[in-house]
Image (cartoon, rainbow, N blue to C red; front, side, top):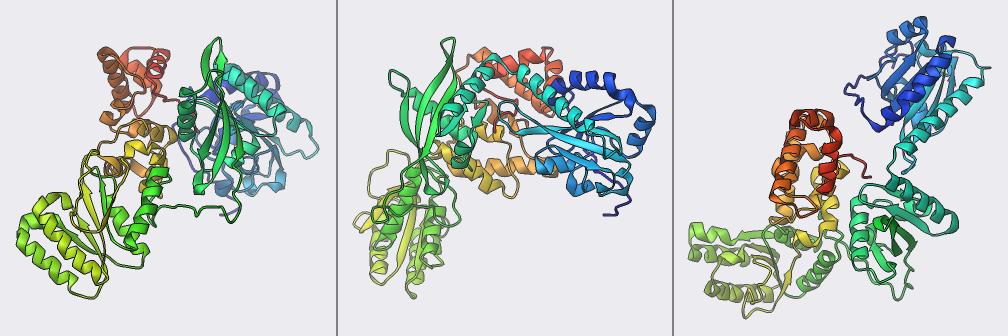
Length: 544
């Protein structure tokens, strides 16, 4: 990048109704009214260094800033503009002062710029930067003090904007963090607060999974409302938790969780960690234990993987055979309906006549009982000669008969996706890579029943990514209408469902703009929020 030329990227679409802008506006107005004529400007950016708002009173300074693209929509990230008061403050996460020739771009050397991060008072995550820019003056220490005071005033207004319930959650969090050395987690379905100890333990765990765990724990709580439990963590780890409901006026507004690492077993007692087969995603305990049992079965006998359509039977069977170093021969019973049963059996016998290897047999449910008895005899002979076979059989959850009668085979059932909802964030991440879905979209997907299981989820992820242009991160508004309609948390009346459908359709039509959707429907934005929250649908994008 040429150091004498300023060319920040431009990203339009600043939301004038965002929390940060609503909190910062009056503060910037007051500071500009008192100090603007002294030749200073006030900038507000988001957490990615995009300028959201600007206050400048001095006309000469205004003209200069305009000529340098220091206006709303332009991005002053460090990788685009080099060292500067905004982008460098984003990178360092603390008050940053850049004087004169410390700027990377020559056009900025005329300025002193001080950027101060603005932190969300609840989550303590950075929301943006407030920057004061004035003529280059290394000896002027007052500008740093003013920038920090401005940031504190904005944070105070952010805190005052929080609901009474959110303030109560923050009070519980601060009080518990002061008196406990454990990891402290305070959360509900919209907000999550962690101290450093809890943040380290929960690294890689999505907020929807945490709230799902906490909600289920509280649903079975004892009389005093305190529950000791265990929380599975990524990588086969676990943590001990003590969960208690938090109340405000008698109503449960969230939960407080004390979290500690589970005691490590001794080396002699520590069980081998169970992991998913290579190339497959999932940490659900039932799924992993089914995989472990399947590995053991393949070592000595034929394995039949049963389950509903789309649970991943063929994927698991193929992955387990490949783990053993085999490239499996795939034989699909569906071909018997095309070429005829006898021709299909002949093809299978010819394939198994060669050197022993691995065989994946698909869709045994398409064969009748007599054909499966004949198949058992063929597989028994092949197994005696060293073949290893995994087969798939699609069935309802109540199927108990032996799929391959007369054969020494292990029959294992893979759990449906509705029983392993914890794995949905991991599965979505795997299917969408290298792109990702917004957390609130994943949270909604975790509230579906998934009759088509993993196959249905994979197809949906592909469909959404294809329909989302420019590599954007898909959010709630990008999910198909029928998906959004199927996912309320609460049982709604027919009239309430119709209202929600109309709101979600309007959201899709306006590209997710809540203000425009409310106008399109002829209701206030607060009414739109209230109706969606009553249905358990969160469009605030405040889930982390």
